[in-house]
Length: 154
Image (cartoon, rainbow, N blue to C red; front, side, top):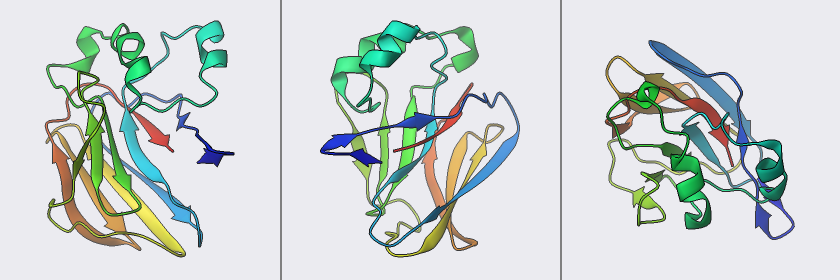
């Protein structure tokens, strides 16, 4: 969400390691957000977390720090953060040289505005992240997800 003119990100403490996981958020009128998955960031210490009041996983400033937590549990994939954006895009990053990549042509891409329930299905067996809107499946946003993730909202 936004805090003044800053973007803030919340990351769930639970880590998804295998199987299928589904989560929903209810979006209210006038709220623009991203909802998705991010690599677990439990390696970051409290001092750094305090400095991250306006943390966003898409800011290149944090990429090297975020990558420093890489473990074998991440698997071989390079999708480190992937979110369904209010404009219908699939925003994702490998925490490399490019800040963020936006896919607007994924199967079922559709924006969400007003009051709506947005759902995501993370399938770690298939390596996919699938979007839902008001209970209806829209399509697979992104392939190539491997290893561990946590839910995140921005």
